Image: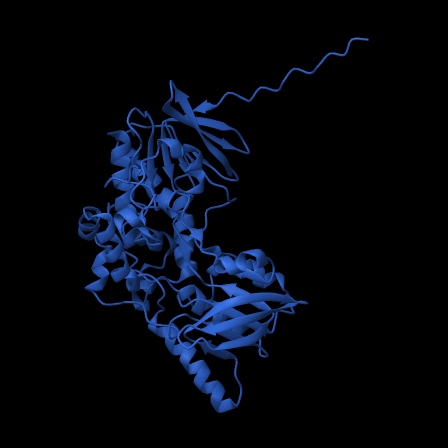
Length: 431
């Protein structure tokens, strides 16, 4: 009997599109607003077919840290469009007008809450849905070559394959997980990017003994939320510095978020940029708002009066060892100056250790033979956020929110220049 072999399954031909944005978070939404504003003004985009591929089911902004009593740490004028086009229908002011809260918000005398800002981002996203695909996780970005030159890129997702010559990487920064915690990640050891999901999973019996690592806003808010949820709780707050410090709120230091400082920073050499970033870190990292600091210090003080301790701030310490013991963890802490060692047992660990931007985003790893590296082995990015490629390449790749090393601190986890960056990318796309 003759056995007929099955014909090989050929991959589906890719769909050709003008441009693809990986991700549809705030950075990509700001870009979509540029295109939609152009349509409103009667100017059809020169790149009409742009796809936004988003792995999540909906657009959201920091959904795991939408905690009661928290707010944004920037002006609502630094929204998705206002620095670029104050007349845009996608501004925060237009959002307030439509929601009927314009006058009341003006009376608040404070920044928008995180809940309100997240709702604003979702409100804008719902109006710029053209070309947006949700639940479309990127599997790989592959090179398409002709005679050894990069002719196009293939973007493979669970839903299909796309070919394009214009790629915008809007995937955001990655959680910073210190190496010592990586083997233990799970239900009881997690980053703040999973905070509410993990915390709510404990149900009515959350852990009693916690360790929170980090000195920034996400760490401080996690500490307060954990303590607010239960009476019998102890939180060990671990810091390499003295403890929680205030973020830099001065007007002059915060000029690092202005467009002129981006121009200045981008013109510097690699070593000068490193020094600049080190000098400006306090404007955006490892700092908390004054009201958070007041709450934390008052909590410790009032607990001393009541003869209890719910929060222990351990300054100048680093985690040197972590060992599972049954359902808990034995943590070895070391004083970074004296070398003195202490051992604590905790039931759960929260990593408020911030986010990082990879030297080369993992999604671009297959394209490395065509990427031009800087002195540190990272991406070389021009003023218009275009990633440098070797001569002869027909592809253009843009970094939309992944260029802190080339454009300064305003490009790291900040709304400050998001609208203006989207405009630069849009103009470079159609140039």
